[in-house]
Length: 245
Image 1 (cartoon, rainbow, N blue to C red):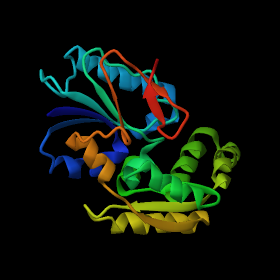
Image 2 (image 1 turned 135 degrees about the horizontal axis):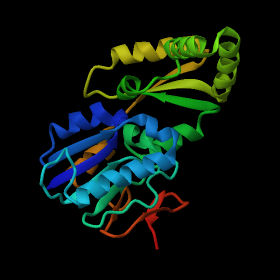
Image 3 (image 1 turned 45 degrees about the vertical axis):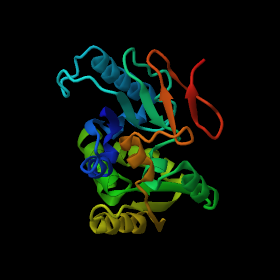
Image 4 (image 1 turned 90 degrees about the vertical axis):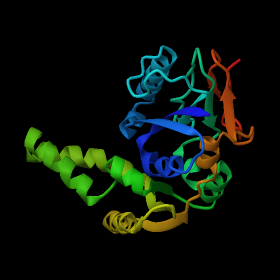
C-alpha cells in the first residue's frame, strides 16, 4: 500500500525508524507541536492538509494517490473531531493523545495514569527535540524575552503568572525506545526534574501501535477506519473515537 501520514513532529524519530523498515510505501508530513496549544488551529491545519491531498495539491507528495491517510494523533483535545476526506479513508489510533502511541496501547497508558498521583509531564527524545520542555533553558529563554520587551518588573510578574501551571505537576516521565540512542535525552530529563523539584520516572515504550498503523494492521480494537466523506467524533467511552452519525 501507499500510505500518507499526517503526524505531530514529536513522533519524528519513532515514525521514521518504523517507516525505514515498513514494506508499505510511507509518505509523512509532520506538523509542529505548537498547534496543540490551540486545538481549533490544529484541526484547521489538519483539514487543510487533507484537502490538499483530496485535490492533488499537496506540494510534498507529487501526483500519487494513496490507499489511506493515517493520522499520527489521538483525540488530542478534540483536534481531530470533524476531520473528513472526500477521497480517502482516514485511519486514526483509538487514543486520547500521543502518550498511548509512545507506550504502545491506551491500556498501558491508563494503567500508569491510574496508579500515579499528581500531574505527569511526559518527555521523549523527539519531544525534547521538537518543542521547549519545562526546564531551566525554557525559563531563562522566556525571562530574557520578557526582560528585553517589558523591563525587569514586568518580566518578573509575567514569569510568576506563566509558571503557575507548573504546580499541577510533580513528575517527569521519560518514555524510552530501544530503536535509537536516548541516553542524552534521559540525562536532560533528569536535569529538568532536578531543576523543577519533580520526580523522575522512566518507562519502556513500545512500537506496537505505531508499527501496526504503518503496516496496515488496523484492528477494530486499536484503530478507527473512517470511509471517505465520513467524519470523526468523540465516543466518550473506552474506544475514544467513533464515526460521526
